[in-house]
Image (cartoon, rainbow, N blue to C red; front, side):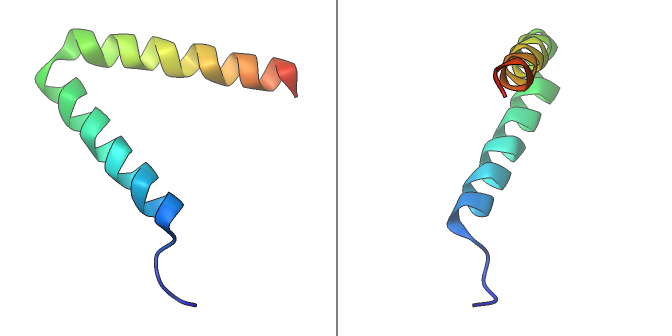
Length: 47
């Protein structure tokens, strides 16, 4: 099947929404960046 996977589409939509909110409200963008960094570090440590 050569279509776009549903998970990929949802992730792209969530990323686009987060990017738009971060562009309009920079403080929210900073909070999102910190949250993503913490989750990534915890994911790497748990692995």
